[in-house]
Image (cartoon, rainbow, N blue to C red; front, side):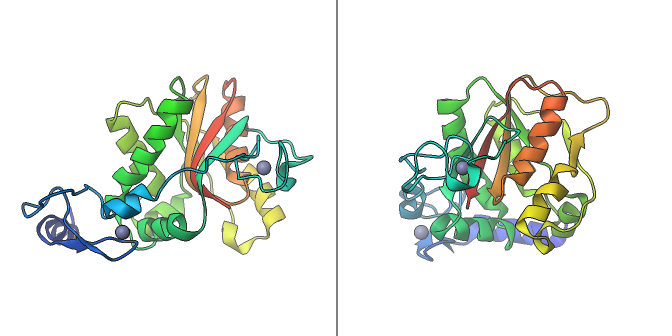
Length: 240
Ligand SMILES: [Zn+2]
Ligand SMILES: [Zn+2]
């Protein structure tokens, strides 16, 4: 472990901290100073409570909230998806967006258990029979950031007793952000494949952090179906 990691771990244990979303002071459960309600993640109880998945009507395909439409959202009409259904827990805005920024950009790994708990609730309710398949990062990206944000959550889910398989790998492709929405779809389709010799679980549940175009889920689902998946469902923390 690098010295900086050791130091930041020590600081996390010893010092009272503030909630990553609202800034109110709080103590972590692991802190010897903790008293009263405390959590093992850097979110205060009020902000933790505020994360409730959308309970209204959702698009039958991408899972995004439906406002005035019925059945399918405008984006999914006339579009064939390789996955059978997707379910984002939150819209990628407000607190969910701030949380993802804190987790990914400022590397708050201590948020991983919170994210895993939100996923675990949904998996127990909706897909108790499915095997979790984390969406792999682009090789360059994981190396650049030094860790894989989705894998970190998958490991927590595994520790909670959920079955996890890792049959997918991601090849080199142009940076998604530099491409337009439609080019991105085509680019992503070619970017995922089964690892050599791997096959898909019969009922995989793809897990990803943020989805904006469904292109990643589509590409992973194509690879999984080619590898033997009967149907593919996807669970995403936030989508827009
Ligand atoms: Zn808070
Ligand atoms: Zn849709």
